[in-house]
Length: 116
Length: 111
Image (cartoon, rainbow over all chains, first blue to last red; front, side):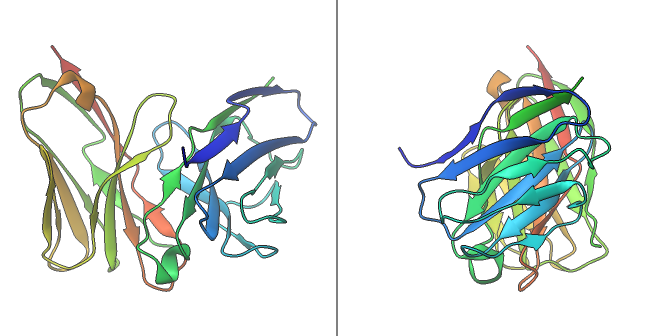
């Protein structure tokens, strides 16, 4: 079945450690996105990528890094510079990106990161 | 940046009741989308709206794209237990490359 797979679903990290969240899609979508979700808040955009080997900062990129070496993969690294990393992280993809596409995002099931 | 004000933040209703929630903004959007998120899962698209004044239904769900392009509402008729979850509105601006999300409406249904 086509879809977006995020892993791991749950992750615990000690302060000062970097951690990488995986996101893989087999929908053949051009664009991929990372959002952060905190209780009582909407989804906030961390990074997005319209094509391979290119990505842009979203609204809250500080303390995060990404890469887009393959069309189907868009891993997110939460670095030790992120001051409050405990959150639910959502990866999404869309056809053709939001500018030329329908704007519809397809989401993975999320990864919950807890910093101990 | 753009912000969406979604209300209410939470709703507690009885099974069978109708539900109404809305999103407003000071900015104009070209696209309005409504998503539902179940606990521990990613949001799933319910309805997409692309034209001012558009009224679209998906089963018991009905959503409208406000004529001013600054608001949208979602109605759920005859609620059932599986309607429980968090509903998000999202607005898209052509060329902006990203969606703006509302804070969500948490729906709880008492059987």
